[in-house]
Length: 425
Image (spheres, rainbow, N blue to C red):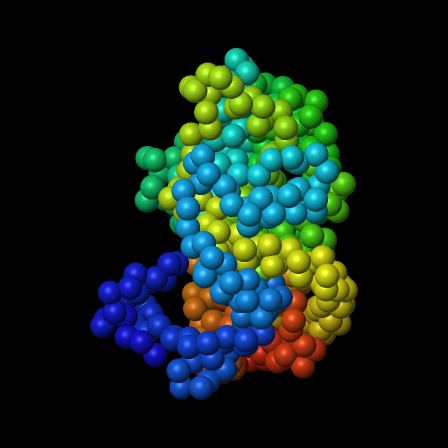
């Protein structure tokens, strides 16, 4: 352990007053993390949903090493390089049909900022200034100002309320209440000119791993088209196979006007994000009038090393049976979830693709449920990295995980209620 008192590091989503020590990690391979003491920890959440093929995949590591020797960084305004060009073309080839341009950034949050600015810039530049954004209830879209504004208001962003802009929210389409969501979006578009709708397709991540149907997603897109509203799909978490298909939008057979991607784009090796858009959005910004320029960048836009890692990731998807691994993992999850559905300590047992989740029955449910830190400590004591969202336990491992490793995860989950009741945590 590393004492937080002795370290100058301020950790994300960490209450240092309650967690005085951090767990050092020296190396990682496959689905496992290794501490300096030699202890192994099974990474059941892909290190915050980013690692897809496994830690330190040799093809991705090799691409990083090779690119670092050739070109480490170059300004991307007015310049370009082969890894970015190869990646952009590769993304267009595998993305939902109709997306034609790729804008690079550094994280999921910034890809959402780019998407919002693209949408508002589009309407500004075509002389139809729409400013209203509609978002799905309970959504999470990152921790930058735009991302927080379109995300759910609550504990994540309450201190920063003065910085946030208002959006129209429609209810989450829970089972049996889908029509209320559809009607609310239709009414919102009819009542006032709307620029864009932003959603996490098929499953909300940090909002509690809430799953909804592809039929709802398809209907929301249909309404958006009818009113000329841009449809933004935040696939930062849902992309790269997590929901069973490469992108979640594929399951609804829709093409968003704007698609955000990050996390798994480099296989979990390097920070990189992209925002893909259709041709009309790009063309609205292309002009001899410099005031119509898309004014967004970061110093490391399209970093060559990160792009090379992403190109290697694409190559893995194109040449290895990744889809078969995902299907097998989904089946393995379903088999192990079966007994938990009958466990009275749990409720709302659910799955989409390679993601599973269930809620531990407790009096104080929610993100700040007191059982959350206790659960995480218990799982770590079992050598498993699970980071519950309050009383919601979810599993999202890399695709290289074995059946025996999955057994370790689900055994720890099954035994958690009794262990916590007995004070094991």
